[in-house]
Image 1 (tube, rainbow, N blue to C red):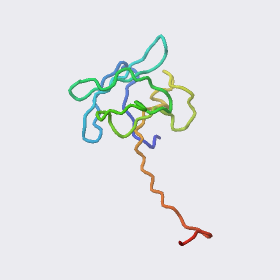
Image 2 (tube, helix red, strand yellow):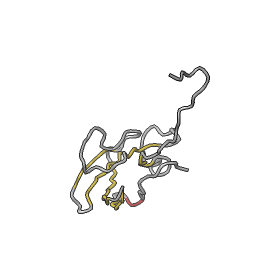
Image 3 (cartoon, rainbow, N blue to C red):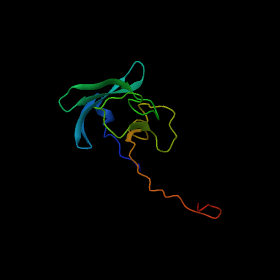
Image 4 (spheres, rainbow, N blue to C red):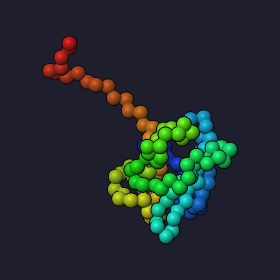
Length: 121
C-alpha cells in the first residue's frame, strides 16, 4: 500500500484529462502516451485551461518540472516512482500498478535524540 498520495490516473483511458485540487487550487492534468517512443508525458493547465507546462516526460524518480520555476506550478513536488524501488523505468506494464506519480508530501516527525557522549554546551 502506498504511503504517499498520488495522481489518480486511469491507464485504460489515456490520453486522460482530469481535475485535481492541490492546496486549495484546481489544476487540469492530461496524461499522454507516446506509442512510437514508449514513454508517458503530462500536460498541466490552470482551472481556466490555460497551459502551464506541456509535454513533460515522465522519468522514474525525477520530480516533474525539476529546475523550472513558475509560481503557477503546484506544490508539493510530484515524482513518478515505485515506492518499493523495484522498477527501472516507467512502462505500460508497471504504470499505475507499482509506479505512480506521488506527491512528495510526507512529513517526518523526527526529533534528534541525545545519547551518551553528547555535549551540553
